[in-house]
Image 1: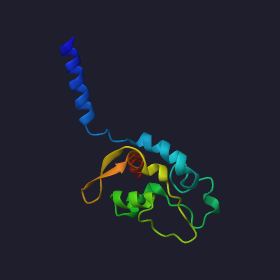
Image 2: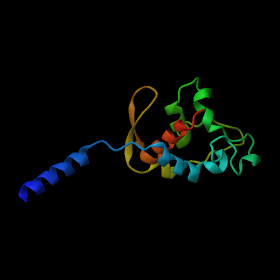
Image 3: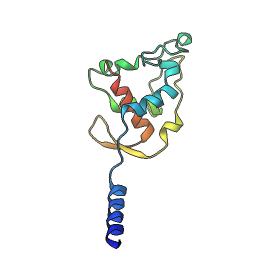
Image 4: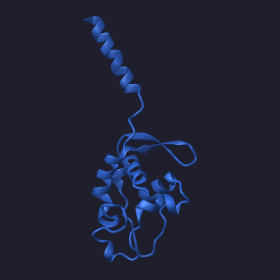
Length: 134
């Protein structure tokens, strides 16, 4: 019995020390649906329920990579979402999403190859946005 308990204790230590599991696109889609779809649309193309009243219309989030020359600009997207370095758009104010900046941290590799501790909800949204690029 003692050996079993020691073995279970070792497994618990290994699990506790392992890196956090990275979020995947489905987790990010749920966050997108809750926070972004009203403006950017369920499909991310800028056609949300309130987009008709906005000038300019919300961005088509499925063409981020294309507008950036073909590569998904992780650092730019993270900065735009968290409000740290948001592009000014006359007449449009994208809300800040404080809840996306909370929670466990996961390592997100930015454009310069550096792994940056990023709140899991923000990393999940990033994974979803990258998955819908066309």
